[in-house]
Image (tube, rainbow, N blue to C red; front, top):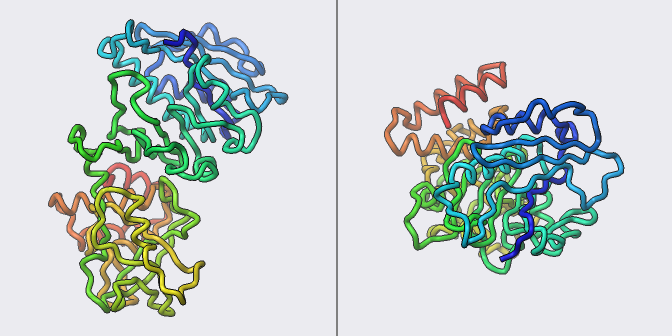
Amino acid sequence: MSKGESIIAVYDVTVEDAAVEPVLTICREVGFDIEEDQIRDPDNKYYSVPISYDSKSTTLSFNRSDGRKPDEPVFSFVRMVYPERDTVNVDDNLEEIEAVFELICRFATGLQAEYIALFDSERRGSAVVPGDRPIADAIDRPPRLGVYSDAVLSELGGLEGLFETPPWYVAALGDGRTLVIESESPWEGWRPPTDAPYLERARFNEPDTDIDKTADETLDLSDPFAVFSAGDYGVDACVAREDIAAEFRNEDLRLVRVYVDDDRNLRRVADDTFVRNVVTQAGDDEQVVIEGMLADIPPEADDEEVMVSALLHGAVPPSFVRLNDPDGENVVARVLELDIETNKVDLLVSLGKAAQHDEGLDTRTIESALDTLADLDDAEAVDAYIRENLL
């Protein structure tokens, strides 16, 4: 087993170029203790701050120099719990492991990091360190645990382009960041969460196991148009093929009024152009569902008009997309028209789950609530209400 240091390096952030205080604020929020007497000159280009969690400690090392080389992270720290199989008991270090994992996730979103890599300084370290830009062209291979912005992940070929086999764990962190673990946990015997405040959604690539119900729910996929008959109308939330990513972003979503044709395709009400195929058997693989939407494109279809649906989660019911009148409104239309920061796909999934579990939110009640929110002028208040009551 390598005796090198296990390093977590954070590259290319946009929040105040990783000024010391924003980083330490995230540490405090996670529950780390800061040696305040060590914070003497936060404007120094080279800076280090000792931090600790319970009995484990590490040091945050900052490099905010204007002359920083591409392979030098904005800041990094040595992992507190380094699991050499013959010396470390995961059960004895569980809290520290989970705290470090949360710290990585919150650094990614709170600082808008383009790339975070966890690597061993003696094993594969140079392979995952970007010596140039763009990052995707500068690394020889992805790290065992990495966080990627949408742009970097797309340049690497998406999730399917990272490794030869599907990654063991994938989590959407929000703000266009995705955390990916290649195979087994970087902490032997520990499993990262699939339900946590700092995760939007997460899943394991283990379809034959029943270890985590939340992960199973995430893999419960379906096409809400699958039960429609030819001639039925609806509203779909679509993205262009080039915008397919680990997380569907609000700015990429398009409201498309459609109907089901005789070949079980969705076509635009406005001009009868082909949008996508209806998927009748979804399974539990997002990639398979997306491929199914594009499986049989008519020869006359315009490639620029072909899209895929972001409504993959089985919690989104047909009643949310159905229209009695092609110009009508429904839950999906109302959500897409809201001016909010909250991820709209996640909101639709949450509303669908509430409706399924009979929480007093049937489709009509949800539509009424969304109409009320749409009439409010304070966008921040709308987002706050959604976070507190609808997610």
